[in-house]
Image (cartoon, rainbow, N blue to C red; front, top):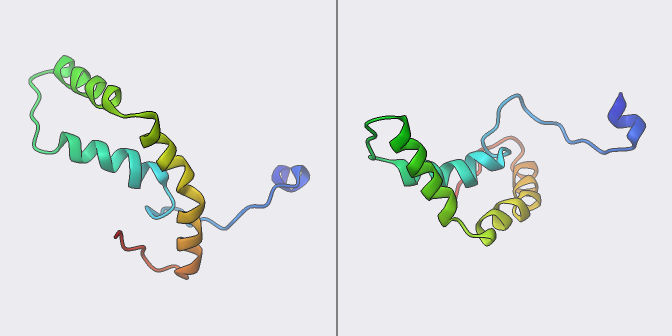
Length: 87
């Protein structure tokens, strides 16, 4: 109701769709790949590795993830509920 009052257009969104969650396909996928097969002895080792991961990411990395959202939405809407295959 509030969104209608504000004049915002909303698109239907399934309860869970990895195709629509930018963090799933950009940031967290990259983080998952970075951390794969690494082992940590304690929380401090993990914190250090996470800090290294985020420090090495450029502004372009984050911009790419954000600016690709509209294209991703178009892919999802055009797929009529089907999964999006990464190229």
